[in-house]
Image (tube, rainbow, N blue to C red):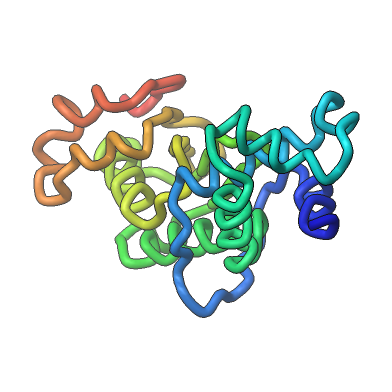
Length: 205
């Protein structure tokens, strides 16, 4: 137990920028990973640190999640079996990269990053966009990323021109990508699907 608690405490925030190979796609659900990350954060709380170590996980399970200690431990063990915080985040990143590699954007992807600094995991995808098709590309990127992995709660899609200037920067809840039909992107990107995003910058026109 001590080793497991210490591993979680030392985990901290991870920005995954490399793609280690994992034998199979992660089977970790978003809820399980969120509980894992919330436990990581709770273990760093001063009030929890003041408790005897033997009580910490039991109190977190009861107060934070309304779970028994064995139930919480089972979730932590499941995530650890997939490589812990870093392993799950890296596999999510790889899944997104693999999904985008099957699109016409594959040679224009500049960055895929998964931020686990908060239990609300965010995936960032940046690519060189075509100004006259940036909305269609953004919808496709969001759809592919949202379908590739269950881990992120939010996707941030960021298109830049060949000079690195912003064309499109927006956020979308990962679950909202379920409303996108790939065969209708060309028709509906600018009229219907754009409404699924929270747009920060739009210089596409």
